[in-house]
Amino acid sequence: MTDREAVEAQIPRLALSDYRITSPKDVMYNCFAWAAGDTERIWSPLMLGSGVHWPPGIPALASLAGVIDAYRIVGFERCESPELENGFEKIAIFADATNDPRHAARQLPNGRWTSKLGDHVDIEHAAVEAVGGQFYGEPVVFMRKPTGQLPGA
Amino acid sequence: MTWMSEATPRRRRARWNREECLVERRNPLKWRHAKHTHPASARSTRPWHEANPKAAFPRTSALARRHDIDAFERLADQWEADTAFESLVTRKAIHPAYQRIIGMGEPGVPLVLSRLQRQPAQWFWALTAMTGKDPAQGEDTLEGACAAWLRWGREHGFLRD
Image (cartoon, rainbow over all chains, first blue to last red; front, side, top):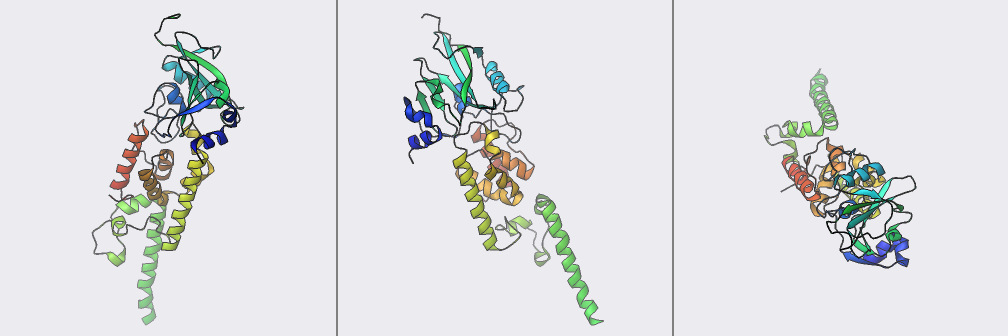
């Protein structure tokens, strides 16, 4: 099975979407790290063991509130929509039907989105909801962080 | 009376074996590092695990060990395939195959470490559950945690150099 076939088998919505694979598989980081721009560590709350990063002071429980707090620590704040805004970098947090956090994606300066799919590949996708569905749920929270670029520049 | 003098050492040997087996089952690390030696090799000064490097599964035959190794590899393959797209380690760790590997207990530790040596993955939750130790505490990268666990495994006789 090719990487593309594996990705589409797991996330069927991608088969009907505009997307491309942008990196090989890598177990050293996950989607939550990738959304924050970290490719050295796996961001995950963990109750036992080690080998992951989770901001100090955030409860080590896999809750949506905990993930939002983790991104707040690195400068993100909640916003209403996934629309491209000049001067801001946006992320989308996906949750499943039980409101458990499952995935995060980051908006690129061109308005497209980038996602790391677990231990698998990175992809670039046109629509934020293209990676949604039964496995990762849907984007339920959007956050933004100033890029340092002046609005309108 | 002859049978009594013959039976006593036999009973004593049997009792020794039963007690040591219990010690080994309850606390294998203590057994391995207390420099216990089996009566058959009482003159040896080597720790038990050094004298018995193939005894990661000490309970039965080589055939059973092979079965345990095959079972472990099947479970580990299944876990990696089923959780390849999972983002959170907490979700990976509750997979039934991962839980069954944790259930192997300390005899499974050499197999997990050997797999970790070949292929880095999130085995740290399982290793901590199986050993009660966390030599990678404070390591926040996969690479750092792998190195710490492999070093610990070599130092404690679970991995060969």
